[in-house]
Image (cartoon, rainbow, N blue to C red; front, side, top):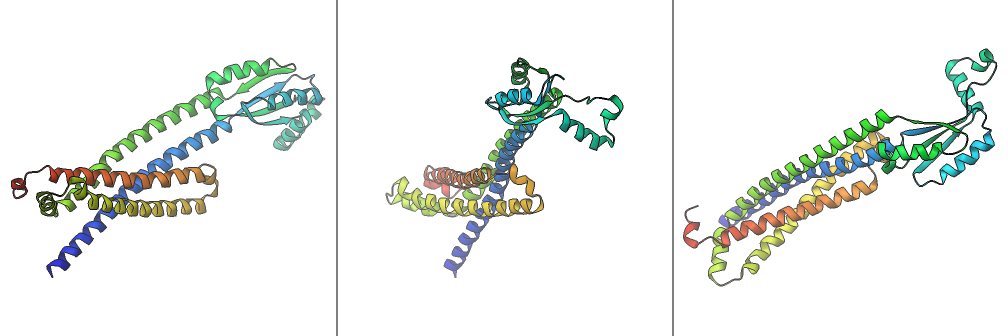
Length: 290
């Protein structure tokens, strides 16, 4: 009966440790997932901010096409869309419900091009020299972009990144404390076994080995459970809003899953290592006073 109770107690400790570690790893995984997705969202937003190139009213479609082909070869351009004066007139006629050329007698719109930039170039400094370079081309009359919006996006993304780093650090500290306390409680019940092995001459590495092995197994199990919960949440998110797949990519999911497993193994192993060492360093007489 005593052995059965002892076994049941040990099993309950393992279950408790796995559950508590899994909950902490889920939180850490969410931080990693949100952090990586925020970077992808940043790139997505930046690449969808457009630079508008206006040609002068004497530019023909052929001349504008030559300039557009040159711009498409630039490393900072990801996509370019040319809008002829006739196409602009059709779009505005559809939007306004009336043809402006009927009132003015001429087509008031000039050819233009909308350029999407690389995310790394979507900042004020890069846009200044990009704008100067584009404006140096023949037939280009004006280069415009949403400067205030771009600066606002960059500022907000920097704030989000800072907040995510702070949350991640706090979660690491809290998770280590919680898991360490749970591990120490489990090892506390086996402190006399540790001391007995030490007294009969067992090496410290030999004493630590089964505890480390158990910690690796528990950390791996907790990581798998946390990954399964996160995968279920992501699947539900994709089902509810499929557009999120452009931000939460398979690379993000792979890195998050690997990070959760690594955190689970690392935290559990480190906590067990130091907890066992704590009792290995403790004199025998002190074991009866704690």
